Length: 334
Image (cartoon, rainbow, N blue to C red; front, side, top):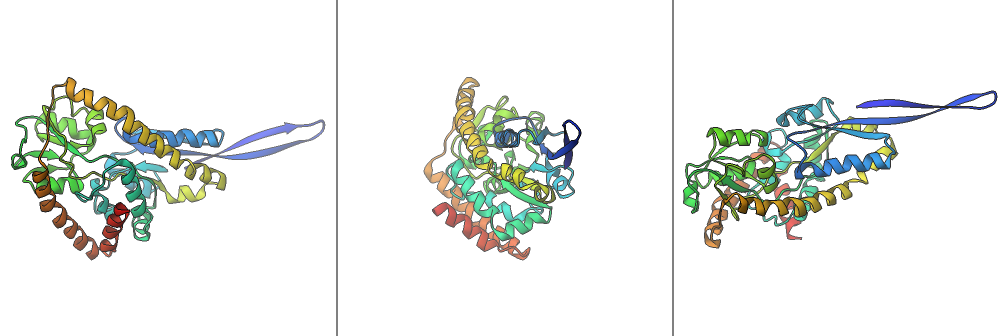
């Protein structure tokens, strides 16, 4: 964190005095390019600068500070003050929030995704889990349910997923594996290259990512309603940097979160989805829709076993895993 001292000198007839104002400059580590997934961070930086008359600024970098799988490590050592990461990139580092990546949780909107994420983020066990990396959870990056775009023979039935290589991480990958698919956990930035080179035949993404990372360009088909789950990608801040802020600057940061999140929602539900459907039509992509009966069987095969395995694994780690899982279900039921 950079602190700079601004000095204003006022002179009178026979005396002078100085007043000093402390400024904060934070570095923020993202990846890829500016897109729907990062709009809340961009808006947050804008609001904070406005509220502090430019005394608290954020320098947002898309890949220039760290690789996306190493953002949590960078936060832990104070290499930068704020970062975004996805839990599925390193499940061992942040096991508490991977509960939000379990398949078929029943999240049906971005608003519900925010609500359930905040509930888990505010649990004492989650706070302690991230504090091991000197990280404080600031806000979520809500994403709609993932679906799969790919090349080659379309999986017109769920049985056709058997043997299909797919870029998928976290619970989405586990769910697809239950169909016999072969998940590969390349990062979002590497997905298009993996598809073009044949490392994978398909990619599981939310719509904005298919657009942003170009995987929709070579795609020949897309699943409209597979909806196996999503990834959880919080924005975190370095605890030392957060605590060193003045009360005014800290208030400027925290009081801007709700507006930044609303901007994110408006952008995703508006411009992003408005661009998505014409892109599918314009590229002549086959849209595959599965029957309710097939999807019910998929949920039954994937949801229960994945949840039970997650609870057992993370209880053994010392986390209150059952409590976190129950919190997710309770929050969604409300």
